Length: 258
Image (spheres, rainbow, N blue to C red):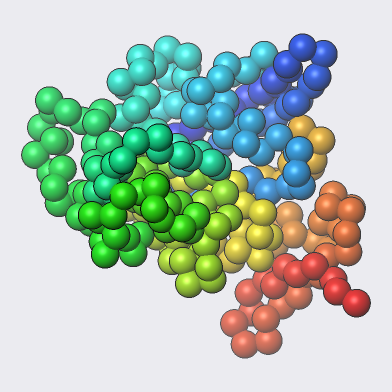
């Protein structure tokens, strides 16, 4: 097995008297897509922020590439991990191409900068935003803007990719394309962690799942291990069906509807 690239060991996070995360441990290896799932308020986005180094855990340790995450200088961190936030806005009149070019900023004045043009063009193509390249990003729909910012993090070309609900505003075509691209990014040798609310997408595209409930890990493992109807129904407070597709044999995870 490939050694983990990022590891969180017994991580907890508290704000005042509110315990948001408690004793969370996980890891992700190069070539792997790890999905964080769980209901609203479970701590998924907070955990992703800790894994990105945007906040420090109250206890426990996070290591990245064998080093404590807290030891990284900002420019090192920007060259090692890229993060797509759940909500991203741009206050000024930038074109989509300029927004994507921002992903190349950590590589300025390095030999990697010689590839900026090709990398930006590839990111625009991969996210189906090339036809929007000259548009003001503030004029885009929510889904188009989401894909533009996804192109920005793809263009950053880091060995760790952190995506917070990248499919939230997307239509079915672009949901599928986004996760297909995330898997391709992992196959190129990167580690990918993605927060998803759609359990069926998570079961289809992730190698492993971490199910959070009340700030703690309720289960983690391969989709077949984590996605049981009894467990998911209990955690989400709504009956959930876990079925086997009659043709492909893959898991189908669906809310039960009367």
